[in-house]
Structures are given as C-alpha cells and as structure tokens.
Length: 412
Image (cartoon, rainbow, N blue to C red):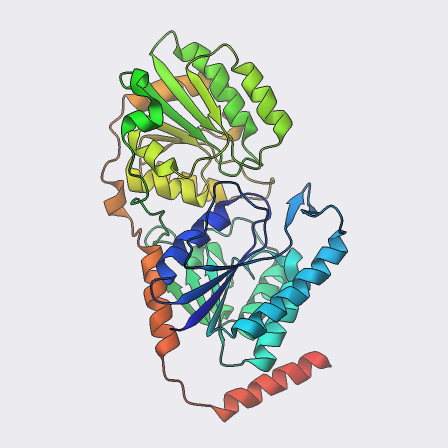
C-alpha cells in the first residue's frame, strides 16, 4: 500500500481542516495516510483511527500575528521545532506522495518550514510526488509579483494540482490569472462534500420533541473567528420573528470564537427560551437536513452542506479581511442560480434579516441542488492520485539535468 503524507495548517478558521478530513477519509481506503496537523486542537473533532496523526506544535494567527499553543515557547522556537520535526517525519515515513493543503496559493507565512521541506524532498527523495490540494476560490486578489511567486513554486516543486471544484461552476482559470504559466498537471476533482453517512439521528435528537412543529432555524459561522455580528443580528431578529412565526433557533458559535463574545451573545439571549447556543457539533449536516432554514457564512464546507442537503439557505459572505473575496465570489454565483439568498455584511440588520427569513421560508427548498453539482471531489481525488502514482515514468536524464541546473541557478 502506497503512503501519503497530508500537510494541513489552518491559521484562522477550521474550513481547511474539515475539507482535508473528508479527502483523507477517502484516501485511507487505498493508501496509508499520515496526517500532519499544524493547528490548534479542536475538542470533538476526531481523525479516523486508520490515519496516523503527526501533530506539530500549534501555530495560528491572531490580528495577523502568529500565536503559539505552548506558552513556554516563543514563536521563533516553535518555528524551529516545527521545521525540523517536518523533515524528520518525512524521512521516517518516506511517503510516495506529499500533499500540501492550499500552499503555495496561500500560507506564505509558512515559508520558514515548507521551503526547507520541499528542498529536502527534492534532494533526498526525487521519486516522491508533491501535490497541491486547492479549494474552488483562492479569494485574495494577488498582485502580479505574488502570482509569479506562486507559479515559480508550483513549477519548482509540484507535480500535480488538484482543484476541488465543479469545473462548470468555477474553473481554475477564473480564480488564477496566470494559470497558463503553471506547468504541472491540473485536475478538477469536483466539490469535496462532507460524508452524510455519519448522521444517523432522528429529528428529535437534534431539535427536541417540543420543537417538531415550529420553524427550525440553524445558524453557524464555521470556526467562529469571524461572524459574531451575524449571530448577534440573529438574536435581535428573533424578537421580530416571534410576532410572525413560532420558531426555535440553534446557534453554533464555532470553537475559535473568543470566550468574551460567547458570554456576550448568551447574555443577549438570556431570556429567550427558543434560542440554544452551543460551541461546536460534528453533526452539522444532520442539523441542516432537519432544519427549515440555514443561516451561515459561505465558507467552502458550509456551502457544500447547503448544496448536498438542499436546505433553504441565507448566506452572509464575510471575509477574514477586506481583501478576502472567497465567500463573496461563491455566494454571488449561487445567488444568481437561485440556490441561496444572500445578505451582504453591510446590510446585516435585524429587521432586514427577519424579512429575509420569512421570504426564504415561503420558497421551496432546493431539494435537487445536489444533482446540479459534482460533489464527488473526495472520491475523485483518490481516483486521480491512484492513477497518477501508478504511472510508470521512465528515468529521464534530461529532466534530472534540468533539475540540477535549476538548483545551481538558484544557488547563485
């Protein structure tokens, strides 16, 4: 059985981790998978036991600066430890394939560990294939110099790009202007959708027996580092909705929402028996399947859940910073297709949200939306990698010579 190492670093939210896990669930059926996790621990989020977990000292971003999980170590000490731990893990495992999640299209703050690792792989294990796993929208509009750097990194180190999108919805050429300069193979896998089989509960288990006859509203904001303003507005909108419809609201704040914001949110909902606030659930799809409406940000994984379940949905495209257009691009396309309703962040007020909810509830759910999109991204990723790694490539001395010339030129 061939071995795959999968590197995942989530710096702000948890979307990259969730998507990576779904890919890994599929890969582990045909490969021995070693998963490198560089982010903070999320309580309740579990890796399949068949996957061998390599946990790096945690790093994440707060206000644009690195934060470490171990307070006894400085950021620079953690960086140094991680750099050598990655190389040691690679040498120990000797994988047939090394996958980076999102890098080099992002994660440039991790050059300190990824460039030494890439150089090490190329110099000590040239037969190991290096693959990039990339979501449907890059999000940030890169300046020409940054795009050139991405092309250089792809051409220098990578053998394959797996673009996790339905090509009829979002083609790689739309998200990266210098696509023609990338020399490695590019494959559209379809969207990576979370596995539905894990949700085995009935509607009562999610919402309680007393709420079966009322409107069930699900609200989520992914990891929770962004999106508090949406949750706050939902609580305020509930007071308006009470005059129109009996309803219950289930809010998931996300594991990374600051404690002081959670306390503030619970205080605002203190006397509202119809609002339940929790941090995290591994059963979000189950809630979506049984909800009358879902209100959320429009990150990759939540959007895929909306498409696969056909739930009525209101999406609020809030980016991690003013340059982050990922959620906006995805939402505008889906809104144009009539699949979701959208509220732009600047229009997020309680009266408008309540009006949107009532309007959305009067619409039919998009029960066949899953059939309109290719949601087999995880399975196709496995298929593509099996084909790619099974190819019999003869030793090409000219390619080896080219690699030597490139390294020699870089050293000068």
